Image (tube, rainbow over all chains, first blue to last red; front, side, top):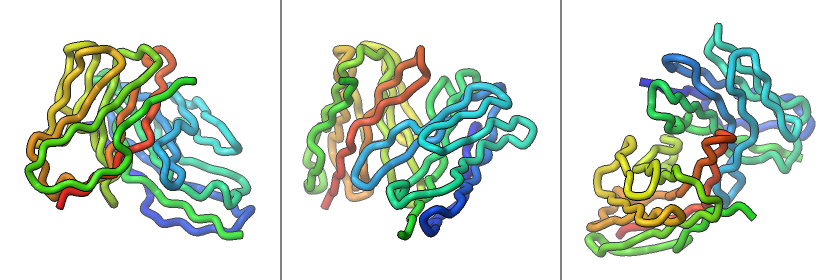
Length: 114
Length: 112
């Protein structure tokens, strides 16, 4: 079945460092891809999404490009801030393969030190 | 304001004592779902509902029930809770047109 694999954390960076969180997926057809963020004590919020190959999602300085050839959707940010400390989840939705339900990776915890 | 609310936010209970976690959304979405979040396992879907009176099992439905009598409400019912249901639970509501999912704030459940 469909699945999402993301790099295990925790990831600890200094402020202004470059961030990459890897995400790869397995799915039939053409899924939509998402990154969600969960700040401490809160629910998940949509960070960005991409619905077709080569699309780039971006928000709050974060970017991810839908790469069908490598089945990847890596999250990047050029200069992280302490306020970016959170858990990040990669997810896919495949209306063809999994009834349109969201399938999540296990999450990557990011800690940014001042 | 678009909102998904859950109650209670925190609950400590004992094995076998029936409980209900309520979920409500104000966006008139048809699709709603319940997830549990456990360390190292991410979010796993428990049940989902595609419309009123239409519900189906997700990946981990054992020990849970749901109902969808009105579009705005989607309660999660644990008839006989057990310690392995200690978890953080999230309700979500989906805007299928914008392909965006809205999550509630979570309910932290401890079953002793």
